[in-house]
Structures are given as structure tokens and as C-alpha cells.
Length: 245
Image (cartoon, rainbow, N blue to C red):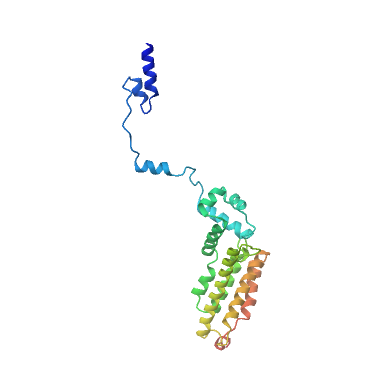
């Protein structure tokens, strides 16, 4: 009896033998080695951790609103994780660092809120009509409810001490001035504007109006007040002799 029990304990101690086989008294032989499948090996090699459990687009929109409201420098990573509803590891895994997240945010902002200027320049028949449409749409968008007022690209540069971000935003603003200048030069070539018109100065004038409207919107100016400003800005726009007559 003792011998039988010892034999049973030895059988249980041997690895790789199913308990059913032990219970039924089958021989305690080691099974043939099983080679894991490719899928099993891949699963085992994957880093363990919780899968991403947040909507990326929603989190990105919340980050956009935070940067738009507070600017780049004043928006910390802890601010971002709080408003996005995710932890710092998830933020870094999904978006990279703060600078990478901001660059993605600016791209989304350009597509969703900032493309009105490009459309006006491309679709309107004259430079003056393009500028007028752009300024009127800026007055609407910069004061619209549901998001911070003004322009993210203009406001985010305030008090920015990160050279890469500062330069990136400056390049975007200068690119807008260049686009205004190209459209104005085309207007001069088409006879819409006097031949002696200074296209670069006019382009900077438009840029100054747009940037000023952004800041005034943040300071509380209404859409109606900004549209009144547009009327004044257009009053000094040069016209060809045929237009004046």
C-alpha cells in the first residue's frame, strides 16, 4: 500500500502529464515536445499591457481646444492628459511628445478651422473679393461659440520659448503673407489693381488685419464689431481706374 502511494506521488510530480491520465492510472510518460505555432510565438513576444481604450480623434480634438485656449507654452502635459482623459504613457504612445502632438493639432486646425483663407484666395474671381471674403469669414470663425476665440496659430505663438514651435508658427504666418502677395500680384497682372500697387505691402496689410482681428476677438470683440473693421480695411483697398468709375 505504501509502495503504491509513493508510485502515485512520483507520477504526479512528473511535469507535462495531464491530471486525467494520473487519475485513470495511465503510465506517467513525458509527452512529445510541442513546437509552438508562429501565432503563439508572436503573441508571446508582444509587450503586455492594456490596449488603447480611448477614441484618438476625440482626444486630439480636446488637445486642440486646450492649445487653442492657452497657447503652446502654457499648456502642460498634465493639462493635456487631464482634458484628454488619458494617462501620460497613453499620450506618448499615441501622439509622441508634446511637440509632436501640437504639430498634429495644428494640422487638424488648418483643415477644420483655418482653411477659409485658402478657399477664398482660390475661389473668388478678384483679389479684392478674395480678401473681403477671407476677412468676413475670419470675423465669423474667430468669434464663433463652441471653441476659443481668435486663431490658434496666432495665439499659440504668444510667449512661446520653444524655438522649433516658434519657428514653425512663424513659417505658417509668413506662408500666409506669401499667399496673399501671389493673389494680389495676379490681380495687378489682370488689371484689377493699379500697376503701381505694392503687392508685398498690401499682403502685409491684410496679414496685419487678420492678426489684429484674432487678438481683438480674444479680447471680446463681437462678430459685428470685427465686420465693421473689415469695412474700414476695404475702404483703403486700391482700385483700378475702371473700378473707380
